[in-house]
Image (cartoon, rainbow, N blue to C red; front, side, top):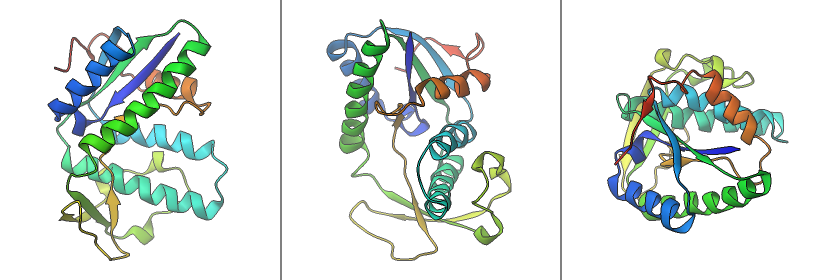
Length: 208
């Protein structure tokens, strides 16, 4: 049985965060890496993963619309800021379903700690999507062609806020792993498989 973490492009560039992550994985979780695959297009892969979360949620229609708009803002942030930077998927082996759930709980906390240590004090990127009113957020974000979207960006220090309703903040959160209480783990694995990432050409030896 497998589980995975996705190292987003911003964390690929953050060597200190990577060192911290791999140290915890090896010394605290006692896990050995099974495979690492490069992700050449994290923005489009993330559309599929986060739409899966939306579709399985109990959000109201208005909440779904708001959530899709927020997600698209972050996707555009990665598309613009990390256009030429790969991400990576790291696979680990676990003994059984109970072991996987235990590891997912630990990885959830690790994800939170990484964001606290390496993300919270970084610059904030606020994005305004031009002609946003032409996007129908009642429909899946998977079908949105991000290459046809134009944006304006404003960058602020971590302690500053932008009070402008036309701008939303893009969240560069370093790492994705399925939530331990989320039943989407196997569905997300299928998204990765269907995306064509898991093949010999995409396999890489290490990130550090």
